[in-house]
Length: 170
Image 1 (cartoon, rainbow, N blue to C red):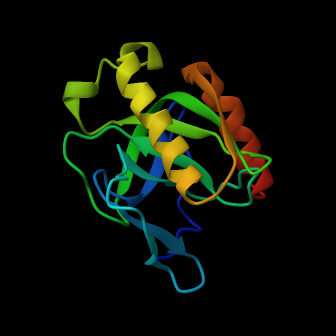
Image 2 (image 1 turned 120 degrees about the vertical axis):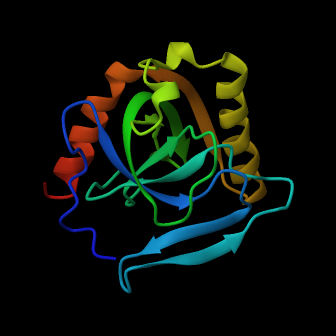
């Protein structure tokens, strides 16, 4: 799977997101650029499962040296390697072992039931806390020190995306 021609943003206000890990999975997959496929990185503790489909925005480079992380709220999990055109609605600010590791939260454009969701304010605070707690627990069990700075609304996405596109040479 060659992602070089896939733009990070197909049009203003939207992202292309490649799913690495479907919601509900404790298998952690990562895209291997060397061979162009999804690879099993590791299996998490069975009590730790991804709350949303989780992946990355192609052709970006975040501060942690990886593509920009993104999650998408889906009614049903998709699959590793699935391309989703998504509308970003907010950012979870997180620092992981000294590096900023923000995670964009999105809704899929293809789901008409989520067409009115434009802001993180439209998501239940308990659901947002579940996501933050997932990362606290998962990273802690990996022995990594993280800090969660909280959630920022959709207006925080564009500057983060632009910086990650520039860092990737775009």
